[in-house]
Length: 263
Image (tube, one colour):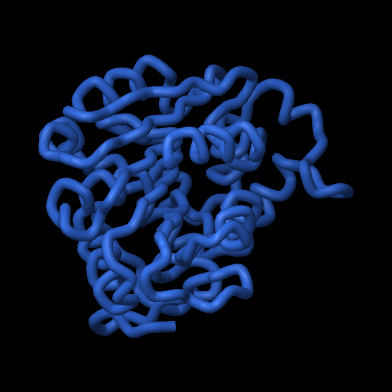
């Protein structure tokens, strides 16, 4: 758990030691989530020669109790400090939703830290409905219900999970409810307030993959394709039958997209 400025970080390496000189993937979760959303992709990378580093952003998961970061730019700067502290060299940075905005900002303003960029469930602008913001600020559990209702494609809402005995929507609900409600409110406000996405995308020099879910109602596919078009070396891949939470809805298809892009 390296210190980054005044904050400490929790990073899952999936039981593997960090190897200097190995390629590194830095996995960044979305609003209110934690590193557990990357379990299937992270474990694959870790057991196939990569340093797979899934972070809990300050205030999330095992880093709960740390002050949450209040802007996308602050998250990007924190990730840059973390990468420097880990001293593993430029990384493939994989971000989901809010984490995708932070990864985009990181690649634009700290290009020396990013070898390649993968953005899941991403758009240049991610406005949050004022009523959802108000519910989150009031710590109303209805905010979590609304997020989970919108986050998944039709098939996932019927039940089932790649982990036997679990339920995708129920797992997401439990993850959000056990987190700090104040951190969730700050996360949503950070997404809503970030208006630099288009300018940052134009500054990203590294190869970039935007993965969109065909049934994503939070960041619709058209918005993801537009973002990919703004990045000079951007490309887009669409996953059928999934919504915003593609890495848990279709973990193998998401992993295949990563593997194809990373070669």
